Amino acid sequence: MTVQEDKKTRNSVIREIEFHLKQYRQYKVGMNNLSNQIEFIQPRTTTNYEIREGSMNYASKWSSTEECAIERLESKKALQLQREIQKYQVIVDSIDQSLEELDELEKRFVQYRYFQRWSIRKISLELGYSESSIHVLRRQLMAKLEISLKGILSII
Image (tube, rainbow, N blue to C red; front, side, top):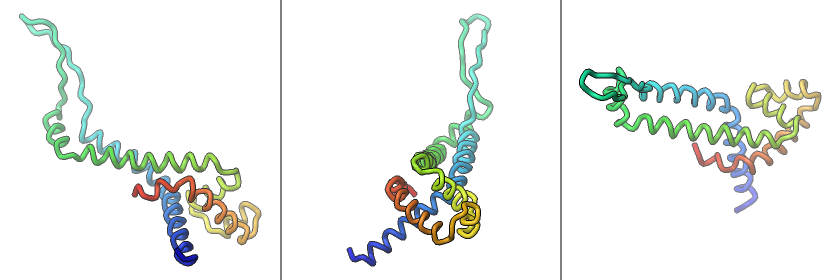
C-alpha cells in the first residue's frame, strides 16, 4: 500500500468515526423508538386467574390483541427491530467506553464538536486554544478513537 492509499484509508476511517460520534444521540433515540415499536408489535400479556364452576382453579394468559400480535410476530418484524436495537447498543456502548479513556480536554472536544456540533473556531474560543491547536487535538483524538472504535466501523 502506498503512502497516498494509506492516507486515504485513514481519512475514510476518521470520517466514519466522526459520523458515529455525530449520530450518538440519534442512536439513543433510535433505540427508544425501536423499543416502542416492539412494544406495539408484542403487547404485554396478562395472566388471568379464574375459578369456573365444577372445575379446578386454573391460570390462562390472554391479551385483547393476542391474535393480532401472533400474526405480526410471524412477520419477523420484532426480530429485525431487536437486532437494530442491539446494533445501536453496541455502537453507543463502544463510544461510551472509548470516551471514558479520554482526558478531560478530549472529552470536552468530543462534546462540543460532535454532540453539540460546534465549529472549530467556537471550540477554540471556549477552550482557550488556537484553532491550529484544536486541529492537532482532533488528530490526536482521532488516532486514539481509530484504535478503540475500529470494531464498530463494520457494523453499519
